[in-house]
Image (cartoon, rainbow, N blue to C red; front, side):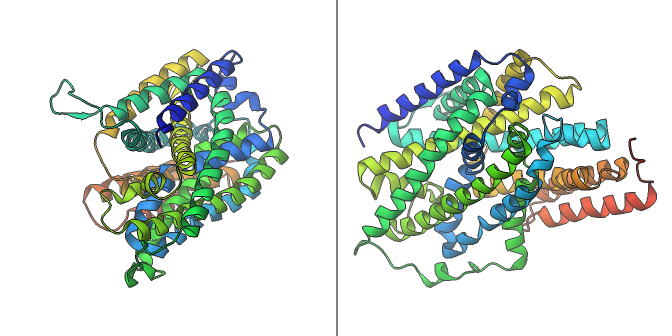
Length: 455
C-alpha cells in the first residue's frame, strides 16, 4: 500500500479543514458542547456509531477474539442491549436542559453528585483517550515506520503517541461537537465500508494458507466461567447506559423524536460493524496463525497482509477514523465536564478549548504507561459504570431518591473499584463495585428521607 501514507495524511488534512470551517460558527459554550442542539438523524447515527466503535472494538475485542476464538461474538451483545435501552430513554434525555451527564446528576441530586460524577467521568475518559493515542501510534508505525525520541527523563520512546495527541487536541479544540459530529459521520461510513469489505474479501479468498482453528478457540464460552463473562460484558453495558458521549449527542438532537430514531439507526449499525470486527479478527487468526507479535493488532495485520491494497487502505482509513472519532469524543466530553461541572460555572468556548488542551496532555502522559488494550478498556468502563450509571438511572426515573444516598453510593462504587484493582485480584471489580453502590444507595434510602417533589 504505497499510497496509504499519502491518503491517510490527506484524510487528516481534510478533517482539520472541516474543523476550521466549523470553528467560525462557534459563538457560545452551547455551540461548542452541543452543536447548538441542531443535529439531525443522519449525522447523529454516524456520530453515535463512530463514537462507540473505538479501539475497544478494533483492538480490544479483536485481541480477545484472537486469543479466545468464537467466544468473542458475545462481547458486543452488552453494548447492543444497552443501545436498545437508550432507544427508549433517548427522548427523555433530549428533553433535559443539561449539557453533561454530571449536570444531569446535579439537577437531580445536588452539587456533590455533580462533582463526584465529573471526577469519575474525567478519570475514566482520560484513560480511554490515552489508549486511542497508542492505537494511532500502532497504525502510524506500520505506515511510516518507527519514530522514536529521547524524553527529558531519559530512555527512548515512540513519538507517534505524541503526534497523535497533538492532532486530536488541536482538532477537538477547533469547533467542539460541530466539527466532531460532522467528521464522525464520514468516519462512520468509512468504518462500515472498510470492515465489511475486508471481511468479505478475506472470507472469499480462503485458501490452504488458512490454518484450522484449534478446538479451544471453538468453545462458545472461551473456557471462561459465569463470573468471568460478567466481568467481560457488564462494564460495557454500564458504560453504554450512562456514557456521556452518547448522552451528549442525544442532548444535541433537534427534537426528542430525532434522538429516538437516531438510537435505532445506531443499534443496527453497531450490530453490523461490531460483528464484522469479531469475524475479521477470527479469520485473521486462522490466516495469520498464532504467532502475531501483538494480538491486538490483528485487524491492522489483516489490512496490510490479507486483502488487496485498495481494500486494505479502506480498512486502515477505518481504523484511523475509529481512533480519531473516539479520542476526540471522549476528550470533548471530559473537557466539557471539567469546564462546567467542577468549576460550577459554564465557561466560554475559549475556556473549554483550554481544557481540551490541558486534558489532552494528561491523557498523553497516561498513554506511555501501558501496552494493554482489552484490560485497560474494561477497567475504564468499570470506573465509569459503577460510579455514574446507577445514578443516571435514578436521576431519570427516580429523582426523589435521597441525594445523600446517591452520593454515598457513587463514592462506594468508585472506591471499591479502585481498591479492588489495586489489590491485583484476577476477578474484575465490576460486580463488587456495582454491588457496593447499590447496597449503599439502598441503605441510604432507608436511613435518609426521600426528597420532596420540587426540592
